[in-house]
Length: 240
Image: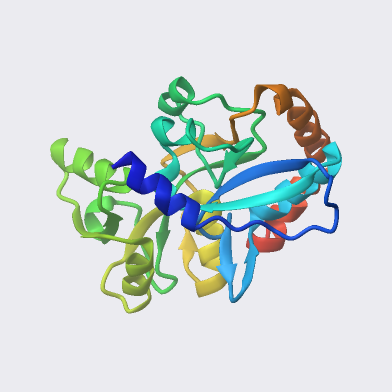
């Protein structure tokens, strides 16, 4: 199974061209998912893409991009990939901190509830129908609500794209999304992001190169101090 996934990852590799034949490269694996790393036509872009272009410039490296499916975030897979870092809106949960070597966090996020803009919601989960992604945190939260005695209606979906579509056609009323992703969806589709988050967390990178980690952390800290990361995020989601 792991071998099959590795072959898939190799087939998805995209190396950005460079005119510097003898340059050093910062090898970054990007987990696909808007607004962090996604395709817009033939252009690969996103919050993480812009941040890591800036990081690579700070340390004097050329950026080498590897496009990965989210299933690549597995210790068994990551150890077999010759990359320096893996990024993609990765929540630094306590569970993940036990599995991965994280570098300096550079974004604040969490889990948000997104609702239709025409919906007047009283804040009670029982009063609306949620769309949840199968196996995701949102599904777990709704199931826990129901186990505690609440009667929350929900529909499970395979992908976030299905959830967004069914929000727009009013088949469901609300859904759970990463907070920064929620802000992006609100800007793109006119949805409403509820102010109170289910939980808050930091977003950071997984370090796979101990020798580079210190230099990368210093570059990230500089970008934070200069407010450049916040500016990059705001360019995709608006006020942040």
